[in-house]
Length: 261
Ligand SMILES: [Zn+2]
Ligand SMILES: [Zn+2]
Ligand SMILES: [Zn+2]
Image 1 (cartoon, rainbow, N blue to C red):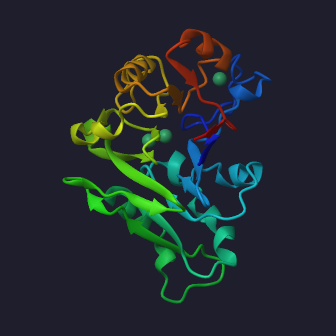
Image 2: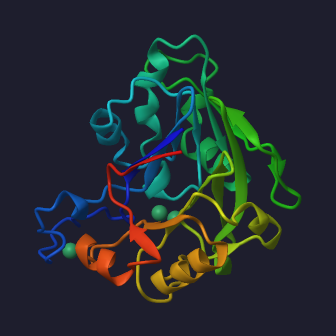
Image 3: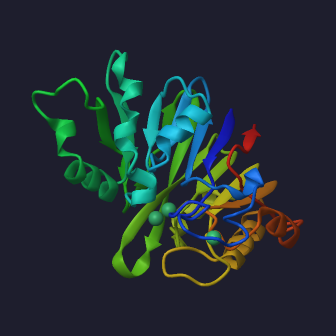
């Protein structure tokens, strides 16, 4: 399988609109970070999240079809491009299935009521939005999509307001945990000794809804993947500086990074 990083940036994307800092004005492609999304590829492509940069990401990675979509959570930077899934449903035999946790499912249903229009017009994306199998209390069951075994991981994104997030471990070798502050204790067993562990952390300081870079590095040292990555990066950091700073522990993710397992 392959994993392509479609977006390694935090919610604003980098460059940030109207920011003249050295990262936002850098010409290096590694410092240009679209909103968080990755593409898994088994026997077909599986997309994680549909942020506002989805259209550009699909064109850039030349994605021709999708087997399914998985959602981590309902925040704008992970969901707002949902309608741009439309082209993948034009010539499709059935609906495109999207899997989400209960909060994200409810959010999609309320934000996009036209998806359930009883007399659907031709220009709506034909999506089948399903709940992930299992639940937050007892845990989630492994999905089998496009030849990939995908284990959802229970995460808390914003503990104070109860916002949940979902991580994914693919083929017991690649872990993708983007927006989170806490990992459910019972799901930690899926995270040890992976080939690669990708964590989301925008900033090098404590934050109410994300782990800090320091906490990310500690988790990488705890779970001991062969290679650790940190993404969902903000505009405070040049890629080259993070490479130096995290040497021997983790690498900063960047748009277009491809991992092969
Ligand atoms: Zn995010
Ligand atoms: Zn900036
Ligand atoms: Zn978020």
